[in-house]
Length: 398
Ligand SMILES: Cc1ncc(COP(=O)(O)O)c(C=O)c1O
Image (cartoon, rainbow, N blue to C red; front, side):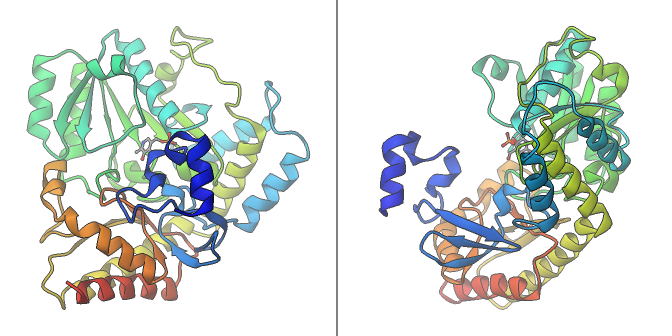
């Protein structure tokens, strides 16, 4: 164990502030990064890696994008938090609404978990019902055991099981990752999201799209624009904050007004809508729109997926590559999984040596077989080639 890891383990729970950072599902090493620029990060030991983790999604523009750095540098000198309103909040909301028109009214919070938790509380407050349908393999942030008892689980892409549950239970809402990223990338089957929309509309319950990961990544306007479905409530985080901690819940105005102070669902936050995150978010969204960053990152991811498939076709080890927009996953299975049960059938035992081969090739992927890889608008052909080389070198040893 290196000195930095030893010191961290002395003071922090298992040395980390978020479980995946122990590296336990990868090579068991805690990875310390000293800096990031564009598509690369530099580790504490000076090794430079092509980064396909991108902080688990936020960095659609890559590390330390000049527009975001400049906006944050200017704002930090003016103050970072006031506990009062700033004009930046509505400025930011206006930009978000221009690409997410279903978010008629919004509330800023600080993390994806906070956004989804509040969206579910809102659904309960509006409907007076307690049960929320979720899907096995989707992740919406950590929840309390109390909330767990009100959670009913269905299989992703299994419309019939949702229909059966809706007929037998009184449901406040359905929350779904419209493209799943938390068991690896799994696209919705044709008709799945439409069924969720019609079932919730028919039963007076809310459809919540957790676009924390898919926002600006499935497409600029998220999975809701890609699949043309209008959810009642949308949660955005990750990309929306431009690399700073920011999230937003938004949806139909008559629903959003159930939040305090207008409504009875109490919701507040010291750092919510703070000017530093608003400034970073505005700079990021403006840059994303102006430079067509979502489209460019998706085009690179499409090329990467095609080249990974072509590489794996030369070997006997079964490999499937799932890609939607700028999110991508490599599964050791014949075909792309459609549910968590399918994911569990893939050969996850291969993952540690695959992860190590990628790292040896100078490529960072998330240290877990169940995480999506993220591509930025500044990843280029040499970054694509590096990952293909990593896969090639791994498969050659199998
Ligand atoms: C789909 C989804 N929802 C919610 C969350 C929680 O977001 P945060 O880590 O910002 O709390 C995540 C985190 O990865 C996520 O992927």
